Image (cartoon, rainbow, N blue to C red; front, side, top):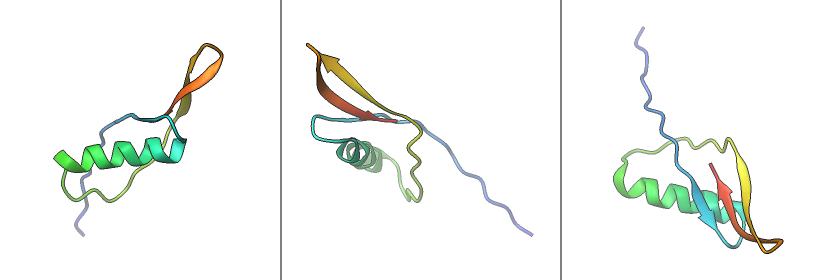
Length: 60
């Protein structure tokens, strides 16, 4: 029986619009230098706050 090996990397995408857009930014950027992307897992969502307002959404 053959097994598989996967490389796991961590990227953080940011967006001023939404967490979904932040995640898409991370995928778009990663796909420029990595081939054959198949799975993405969002492990953390947070926001950058400036002057009491959301300045950016971040997806890790």
